[in-house]
Length: 467
Ligand code: URP
Ligand code: ZN
Ligand code: ZN
Image (cartoon, rainbow, N blue to C red; front, side):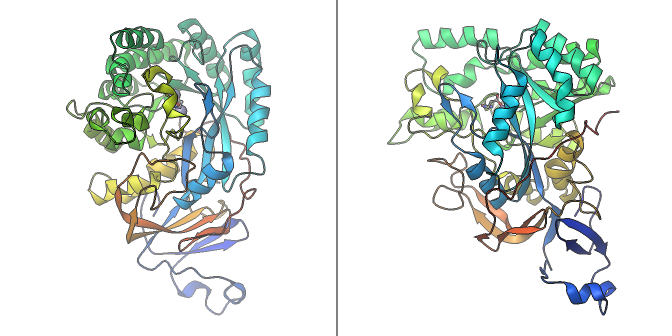
């Protein structure tokens, strides 16, 4: 199955590379090639798809006085279990820090530790003369995209002047601007007022981060992109009104794109409000504190996200994998939701969760592949090598069994370094049977055969998605 169609075929892999996609069965019989094949994987009745590409993860991200609980080792291993063979993580430059020191630090964290291939985007947390001068050199390092934050004042935040200046570099260099589009200063006032009223439970995180704050920032980012001519990619879109802004900008002919994440397709603010446990009481809801926040199901955001994936108002699905344990991490926000580290862990489950869109008739098989692999490859400058099964491509291949079953939960399928699962109890129609990462079988019928260090840094080219 590819993004453009499906058919019966044999896929021939030599070393790390796909060398042929052949008519089934007979083409090789009796040839020297057939005699030298040392392993045949029978995928009869199953789907053979290009390995998943999760273009938004945060292994070991420092946040709120702690760090995301998955290392590159544990996080990429969990990704492999779930049929993802490439991640693009975010190297971090903070205010006053050096862009290349931030990048070097991320290389140190990842090198020799990853089970699958990885690339980096660069977070620009402090737009100033020095970082603006450094940014064009990112292209030579294989970093072809950077993320700005209109949220989190005092941490990663850029004001409009900083956004404008960084977008001018984006326009000049072809670097893709990725935007966290929420009005951070306004949100922080609302959040402080809620806490002052004693509204400190995790649920109020989503009340403070109202959809208006996302719509407004998305519109502002679009206008700043228009005036500078920068290509814009809005991350973790959750509000239907933000999608409408993206659709409007695309209809105007702008190079504006958006991703959503499984949590915004499946989970809701109402469920977060209703979450209770003996151990945590209403603080149970902290498991689903992320930004942008979960949205109200009564308002119809989730259905709108699914629809936008059909209509291409949203182009792809990443996880924004940013896991924190409840113990010692999320619990930092007991009594004040503002101190709960933001993020959900999903890197292991994205392919399975998105396949449910096929099962329920919301997506075609081809669209599933496009949203989870082919478009991420094109969007972030890896297509040809990644995101497609064709001669010359890296042999990143998943054999997916549509008749298999996967139970998700902390005691079921769970390889992420967390003490809970945000997806506890989800039952998946489908199963990741075999995962091949650059020619090496890393998941084989329930066994992990990979090793840390198998994954290599992928130098990415400029986005291949612009008109
Ligand atoms: O809650 C989230 N999304 N945490 C990760 C940081 C970000 O803004 O992507
Ligand atoms: Zn963000
Ligand atoms: Zn993120």
